[in-house]
Figure 1 (cartoon, rainbow, N blue to C red):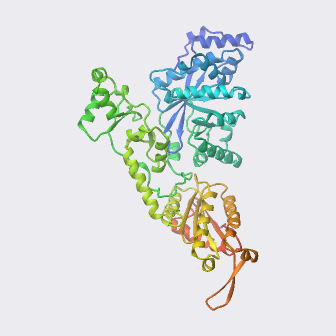
Figure 2: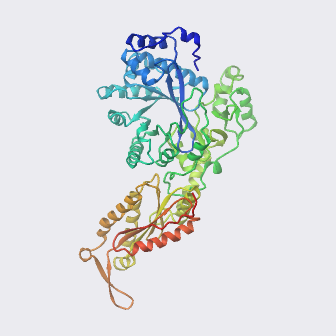
Figure 3: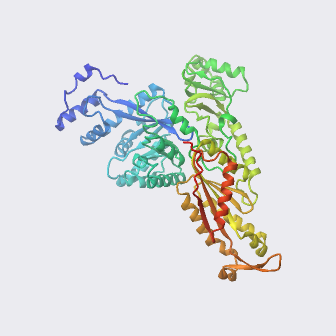
Length: 610
């Protein structure tokens, strides 16, 4: 970082004081002498703890009244020097980012008005460094005015120009200014950063939780990835992860630093690697689907200083070796060298003579796919599908808390996905195609082992057998399909799980905070939609009459739905079988209540464990 020596400080004004001229003199001195320090705060992938990138931050001289960016940038805008200040900030941040050889993306804050000025002046020089391609830079738009609606069309056009050159775009502090919502709909950014206000105490505030859920849902539909800012406690981290948010940053993860670690702290990595927040809602076998067990291949890495000739010899000696990972001395991956790319370069005239003795970093892919070993195969498949297709061909690097562990290949990933699909089909209910007993039991066992709170809702149709006798099994199958549809559409697929364990019995494994409202909604919708299966006369009577085995007339009410719910707190149940037995008893209690009914088992099953 910049060394603010005593001699350097002696050349600037002794005190900025309070007068505008003194403040301006201080600002001009900072600009003339490049007295800015770059700090970096990591942005981590919530799916496993890998570092997605770093946000570049800036500070003025430590003994200056313009040390804080909250003072520095407003003063620059006041005196019409915002463009000059932000340009210098970008230079300082980019140069230090490259010097530190930090992994992942670089997020650079840019105000919209400065972006428009730069677009007019020299778009091509916005960020220029031979070691930092535009594909690794995210332009983070920060709203610093009450509104930039009047410039929206120009801003969207400017952003499109940068994207065409390979840059990615993010909207910062979503929710702080109303116009950022309109910008989101027009710009369709790659990333959306939720303002820290909505993350603070999110574990205690259901309104903030609902806001974040809604933003996540909109982002999924808009093709944006959500980043939560301001995560300052373990509880906030767990809740945000549970909502399926892509990435996060904040003091609990790591504070801004002039020389940041490229490895996430152990307690944070542990929290992110555990499925303590409900997973992604896949409806198949997944408990043993971690890539560490299924895809990890031990491939000896090379150091970043290794000559290209040595890497070429590795490929020559091992025909089955498709790629070689490149790591720092501490084991942090920095790149990947593809066999075909290296061989192709060496086959060109004079390229081997030119590059052979140079460090392998000259010909490596500096932006490989890096994933944590605890990531599930389903999560990895989504990342690969959403990312650059070269990752499928080149393979990916597998880490443990940021340290290199091994490699994985796209071919093996496809094989495992196919196996999982076959496995899921084998255990799926043939009528609804929902997971059957085995996947349901595995999901429950996983949550019990992870010691996370959840609810099991046992759903059963009432008076269903006589309906089959009167209206036929084909109509009965349609009611079962209707039930499965209602259940799937009512739950939060990012947190909840729907299983069909046979006949007219369904199981919901719920981690949604509003699970009770969802269950009530299920009952209300079922009550409305099931009536179409009955004749007008039966609907008017509220039921129908059949003969029992003794030839006696019996009246049966219209088919209804009963739901019995058991709350499974950490340590309350030892196994899936134990919990299932309690759920079955709870369902019986629900069926004793007339009509569409919900019964909550309020008994305390705690074993006295924390």
